[in-house]
Length: 104
Image: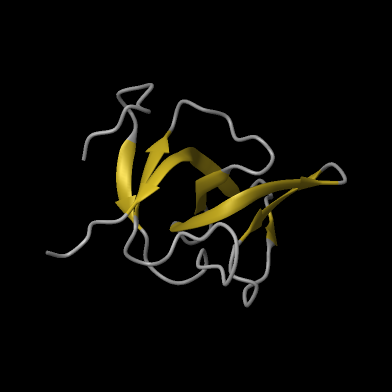
């Protein structure tokens, strides 16, 4: 897919799997959407990010939240809980765009 947001040659698209980022109100990035990740950006409070859990190599998609000097990765779906971003979690990149493909 083409995007105007690419800032490096290390950016890429991923397809969202699961409902952690599906919200009943406000911002929602449901399963099946495609997200564009820019790896050259440092996350800021409120950004959506892709991160890797180093202990099991799981890739996660969450909202980057700074609260009282601590960093959390928070799902948009209120049925799931936030996790504290420790040294065992590596942020890979910041999500710059989300889109879906409509079936014809």
